[in-house]
Image (cartoon, rainbow, N blue to C red; front, side, top):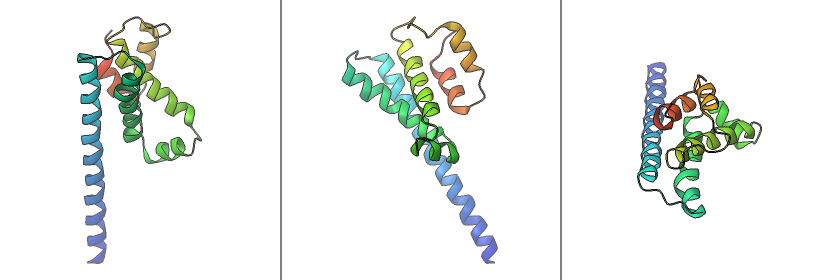
Length: 127
């Protein structure tokens, strides 16, 4: 009986966390689309309305081990890459042809199987 109870609780908690993460993903994506539709091109707005949601989305979509390595700065380069890629992809919708953000680069990165990268490509990258 207690084994069943532990399994049930575990499944419930995993689904609750997954559902909460999914809702946060949707919120951050919506916030980024909102900025694209009504961009403010000053540093403060970009930090608040693009950088912050991209950073939060990076963490929400990371696996547990990735989160741990991002927080401990063990793999901070990957965190910075993902958050930066998100920002560039979002800003590209308002300011196309950013230096270094070429069609070839976007196509190569979008081939990655990382769910975060796939989501950013689907939502914000136009070929």
